[in-house]
Length: 254
Image (cartoon, rainbow, N blue to C red; front, top):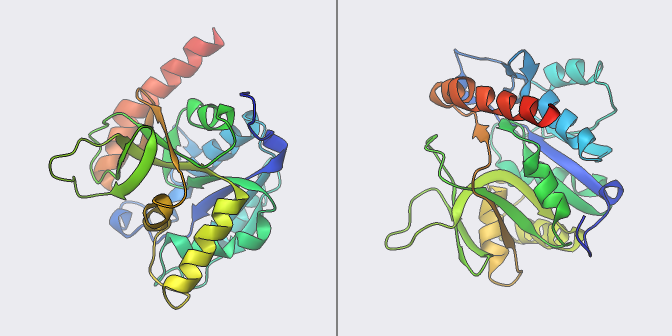
């Protein structure tokens, strides 16, 4: 691990899993994090990756389908602390993250629950010097991408619309590493921006604070990963990402 980086024992993982998953409704009616790929729920894959990376403290923020998560976690191999967002139907991801503020004593590794990713996503962030980092990849073509813009390795803006006349630095993966100091500032920004709770997303908060708080763009251009918000993204994850991920893992174990 690079000099100046935090030890994994001092880092809390926060998995945001409160969303409605409305674009998958009819195809899959439970929380997206419980969607099975290769027979394994997405959130279980995330928990396994965190454990292998040395992260022992994890907080799962639930909302829609919270009972299904409680049943799942009752049989989980390692304990996971839970926070619940009762306003999940009318709030954004920042409110879910804000609800975890008292459960994070130090720095945090932030993940969304609907991701399929290879272990390098975590090891790259954990090897970086202590600071605030968002993980970006090269183009995936999966649709509905959040693009990261900035210069000299520093984030300026996260945006779904492509900015005219400017090339993005990469695609935001939905995985970040934040210091406790920045997390506190992000929560204060949310509290002062609008009445709490509100429909505000944490990536908008990252953009709002980026001018005054240096957030580094950590690029892994060939990272294997997928977000699963709709059926087309699910199909891509099953056809393209999961086979490539399995092949990569088998090659690494050989």
